[in-house]
Length: 509
Image 1 (cartoon, helix red, strand yellow):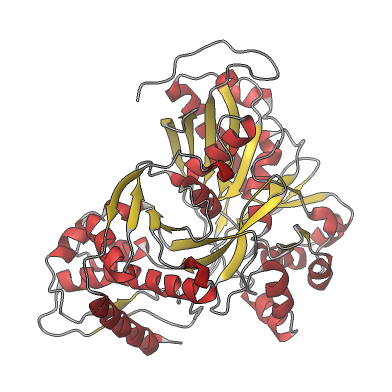
Image 2: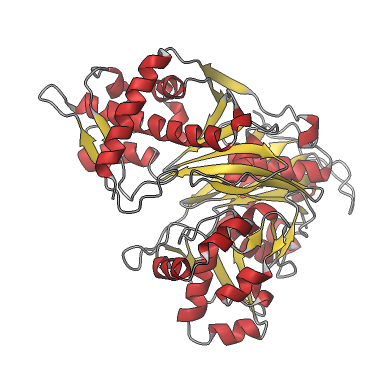
């Protein structure tokens, strides 16, 4: 698509502004995408983000790189799209969720590296909370489990382990936030300390029903209230960027955690619609409407988005290993050279080999939540080879997704028969998506715009700027690239899924 032409614009009301800018700050990279008013991507700039592993189980980011890379990407997208800052009606921010930062309100400097969502250092704190009988309260109020995945216990670790931090927090000298809040603070020159309801809902400190920080939890976890940001709608006025950063002040008008932004980017606006994102892991969200659904199958209850003060809820399931299984085929076994070869190799396998792979490299996620499980390949015979192992690895992603889908249907019968909208790197493999449709026994839709997370952030900014209709008007920005229909007989799919569940039982911790 040709770059947008430059055009002079008006003053504070941004008359004539017809572009949207999405900042997508992820776990391994930061990118910015410039969209036109019809939500077509125009230009992209991306920078890889290093991860730091100071010891086993610990994962960190350098806070200064989060900011520097974000500014670099925003500038790069504007330059590549031939658009001046005054042409941008709003910026939408989406981010890796749960990653935790604390910084000095006076200087903006973080007191510690960012503790990434993958980090497990607070496992002992979680065990302590469970032993104290607090998990029931946490789940009831926040919809989450007492797990190091979430922000609260990372923040507790900082307050307990960094000398002098608690006293400074109680004096109001420090600010806490997830990556969105930290970026917002720096993009606005320290003028705004805020977050949105979706990111707040991932901290394990936020009452998702009342829509506010939970004072009972704050007291139980000994977290000073003064640390916390203001919680706003996902489509809202979050302040303006410092004019020195991008050439002019640009309003920041949208914010959502990455998986919620992808749900919006996939236009899953009606209850019963679901999306699944396939990256290193997999995250599946089901829109349950205006009422939170308490899971009986260890799924998470979360905020899908909040607009106009009204919250839409979702059930969420996380798979730890999806694309990581393909990476293991390449880097661990060396049976493929590129990720694209996995589907080609799987297509040559004997479909009746009986080989099953459970990729529990770091335990099993939802609905099992078995941290002690470890990976295994079962059903090997002399006839099995690289092709059968590749097929089993790709099939494992589909069967894990079916486990999530079955749990969601059991928790919320209103889901009924669904069409699953998918995104992420693995959707480039037609073989994998065809098998996914077979395993799930439902259609699988791949969107025309692959960058659904950034698309969702741009959409939020567009709603606030008046360029995009709200979800209630069924915005038509979503377009399908291809649909995969199930070809496998239901009985055969059930038989193969049963074999998968037997294999999962074999590796249980």
